[in-house]
Length: 453
Image 1 (tube, helix red, strand yellow):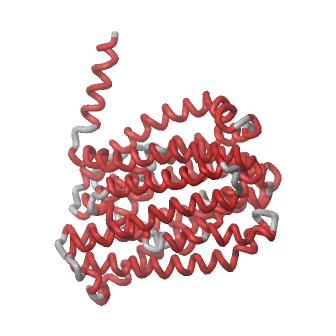
Image 2 (cartoon, helix red, strand yellow):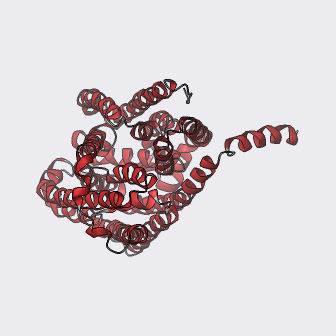
Image 3 (cartoon, one colour):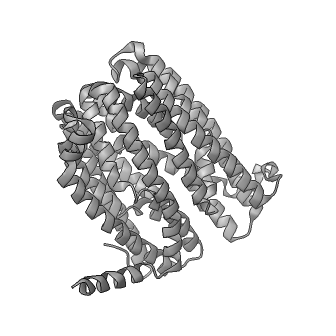
C-alpha cells in the first residue's frame, strides 16, 4: 500500500526537479523561503503580541499608519530591482561590464531621489492621514514617525536587485530574518513593559533600518567585487543609447506599481477611510492569515525572474516554458494544502492565538483564500511578461482593474465594509492573474511552446 502511493509521488518529484534551472531556482528560492518561513513565524508572534497589547481598534490603526507610509513610498517607487535584474542581467550576458555598472549607478541615484520625495510627501500628507484614517488629528506625529523607514530604505530596491542577479539570496535571507528578530525583540519588551503604539512603531522601524542598511552595504560590496573599486565613477553617458528604453521600462513598472496601490496594496486604507478602526483590525488580521498561503510562494518571483531573464536573453524558449510549468506545479501543490488548512482551521487559530474578539475576521479570510490561491498558481504572471519585454501589458490590465475596483469600492465598501473589500481583492487577483497568464501563453504559443493553461 505504502509503495503504491510512494512510487508515483517519487516519480513526479524526480520529474519536477530534473532540470538544472529548476534545481537552481528551488535552491535560491529555498534561501528566501527559509527566511520567509522564519520571518513569517516571527511576524506571527509579533502580530499576536501586538494584537493582544493594542486591542482590535488600535491594531487596525497600526495597520493604517504602516500602510500609509508604504503606499506613498510605492507611489514614488520605480521598482528598480526589476530594472536592474533585466538590464544588468542582459549586459552581463554580453560581458559589457561598464554598461552594467552604469545601470546600477543610475538606478541607485533615481531611487535615492524617489525616496526623498516619498518622505516629503509623507510629511506633508500626514495630517490628512491622521484625520481621515485614524479619525484623530492629534496622531499626525505617529504617521510622520513611521515614515522614517522610507529614508532607511534609500536604495533598498536597487540593492536587492543587484544581490539577486548575482545569486546572493542567502545574504538577502539572513537580513530578512535579522529584521524580524530585531522587531520581535523590541515588541516583546514593549509587551512585557505594557508599552503602547509609539513603542510598537519604533520596534518595526528598528527592524527595517537593520535590513535596509545591510542590503545597501552588501550591494556596494558586490558591485566592487563585480566591477572593481572605481565602478561608481563610470559615466552615466554610457546609457544614452538605451536611455529611452530604460525610461520606458521604469515608467511602466512605476505606473503598474501605482495602479497596484488601488488594486491590492491599499486595502486597509479604504476600510479605514469608509468604516472604522475596528473593522480595519478585523480585515488586517484576515489579510495576515491569508498571507500565510503565500509564505513559501512569495520568494518564487524573486528567484524566477532572473532565471527567466537569462533564458529570454539567450532565446532559449523551451527553458522559459519549462520554468513556468514547473513553477506552477510547485506553487499549486503547496497552495491547495495551505488553503484547506486555513479554511478548516481558521476559527480555531483565531480564537486560540488572537482571542474571540477577532473572530469576525474569519469570513473575510475565506473570501481572500480564493484570490490568493489563483495568485499563487500563476505567481509568474507579471514577471514573465517583464522578461518577455511586455511590461506594458500588465500595466494596461492593472489600469482596467483599477477603474473597476475603485467603482466597486465606492459602491460596496461604505455599505458592506471589510467583507466587500475582501471580495473585491479576491476578484482582482483572479481576473488580473488570468489575463496576464493568458497573454504569456499566447506569446509562447507563437513560438510553438506550451505553458500552464
